[in-house]
Amino acid sequence: MYKNLIKKLFVLPVVFAVMMAFVSCGSGDGQDEALIGTWEFVYFNADYRYVFNEDGTGDRGIPGYDIQTFTWSTNNEMLNISIDDTENAELASERWQYSVVGNALIIASQHNADLVIMLEARTDGQFDAELLGTWQWEFLDDWVYIFNEDGTGRRGIFGEYIEAFTWSTDSDRLNITRDEAEFNELFNERWLYTIINNVLTMESRQEAELVMQYTRQ
Image (cartoon, rainbow, N blue to C red; front, side):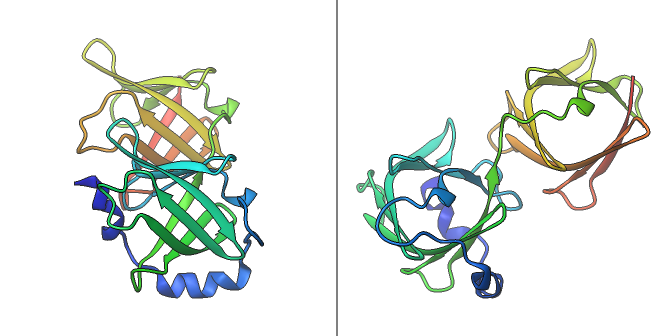
């Protein structure tokens, strides 16, 4: 089911054409350092990600469920991907035109017309100290978020329902990965957040108009 997920992603030909004017690409055969790391979908499916390793290996898919490994290289503005799992892959080798603009990676298929994918860099290991502690939801006193210094956390109603997660921050972005979740729900949540006068405002980047506020306990 999910091995064909890439074929269902949204198309961004106009965005790609504009952003190519600001391309940050590698030149020559090898691995462009700008690609190294983890890239994931935010608005379409935040559980699906690409990982490019420094040694030219990589993988893509949904961690813990469906992962496809590959090797990769770059040449000028082209990304070459060789699929390890050729039995389940329609193309053993893929070729993409790519650009890196800030935290965004845009890849355009050279095999499927109009297939353009935008991903965002996943940055872990940063923990905004302002978030540490317990936050109480404005509409329900018993519902809280707890952010720990080691990047773990909990949320829910004490004594009735509590959910564990890990978290990290990157600028004004809050990344939450749920430790336990049904597969048809989001494992990875993406929020924009601000803290003003001990009020934490979280705005979902995946669900339109979902904004929540919490006060520090």
